[in-house]
Length: 619
Ligand code: F6R
Image 1 (cartoon, helix red, strand yellow):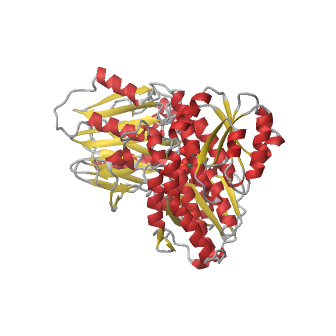
Image 2: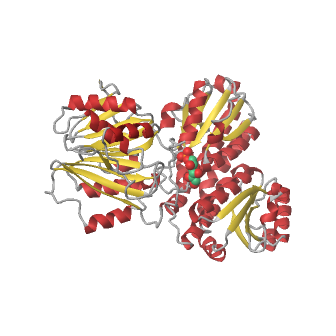
Image 3: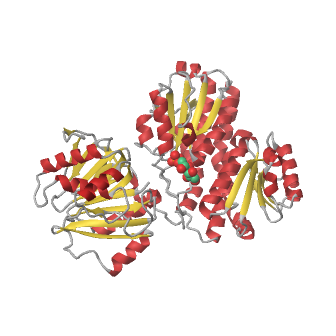
């Protein structure tokens, strides 16, 4: 959580920092701030609230005036509060007492209380309730105020780091130096270089358009970034060499384009993403899982069970994956919420395969469960969107879902791309384990290839869904029902709706309703029922009738030409037909659009829902 950024170069530094913060805002957005070092002073502006408020402040009272083209160094922060309420005082950056250091921080300093007490006893004055502020005061104790060599500063920095417990990524500036400082321990941090300029940021999106090369920092690493070169050090202050990678993202990929929201853009990108995935994953009749997948056929044959672990939407994709692994590959599979798994005994054996699913590759709980598996020598495979993320580096095997940057906080295109890749993986396992013959495989693949076109067709429901959303958007509570492979779709539909519209919504396995939840249905309760023509269809119809009999307002998602649904529902969203395994890919579309339109009608901030952050990097 929290986005941090630093820039050194001669562009308009305020604009560069604000654009970068806009791209990082999905990580947290309850307060923000920037600081720039200029002519021996640090200029700072920060505020509780969103970035537009900071922009207004900067417009009405500019930070400072300077000559165009001068090289300047600055940092910025967008916050997701952990220690300390949301307030101007608790917004980053923070300064030391002498105002010679400014810092932004992502992560948590676990021992900040004891450090703070010690520092207060030594005479330091604190201005916030945050854990972050201790870092600058701690460092201040170790440096002489007016002059310090680069070498001594590095020593002071590594001594400071040794005192900090927790996980963090830091970006620091000081008028004492002509470089930007980045430090990584536990939270992601990248250092990028362009032409006579450079950036440090918690996410690659911030670097796009400025940096051509990027260095992925590892835990314990420090960088001193000058406008024309960068030096890296380990936590003992010893110089290290690192290899840069090419930054291949384009500005277009990280902008909204003609869309009003990133979420909408990302929903509409789904046919293209699945088409690209088809191209990447299938060559002739062969399944290709990419160069980071290293499991040998012998390993696959010996897998006794799979444990999938993930959070939120990725967990829902995992529940669908369980169906694939059990029904297609015939491997016993369990699915765990990562934050729960880490507090349970790991009763898995050496032939268990752990599959971690994560869009960001940074979710702290998923990462912790992955690390716990590694410690116990359990083989791991991560299904990820973000390359060079922590899970990419730490999992034994990785399959990328190739969804491109997902910026809307609500996950949409990553979800369908995860399901797609889980299906492909299950087919691959089934082939190796001889659970599927060529004819069946070809039939599955043939149908899979039709999905992008079918999603395109489903997206045409947009106008109808908007019209239906207008009828229901004031309802205080929604119920989502599904069975079998679409029970996770019901969970996902409810999650999408509640996270972006703030309406309470609950997803249930439809068969479970009569064991309690049915009592929440009254007249006026919209009940969204997933009732495609699959093996659960007849049972689903009965469950719909039960909900209807209790006054529920029935909205169904079903297949074209299903006249029965029209008779029993107030509204129906019709989908093209496909095989049962692939229905969640189509069902996801009306669920996403329904949540989107309801949230827009309620005036919610669709891309940045309250209290949330896209990348949850705290446990
Ligand atoms: C919901 C959503 C979250 C994430 C969850 C896991 O729309 O985006 O529930 O799915 O925080 O994130 P990743 O997949 O990055 O591990």
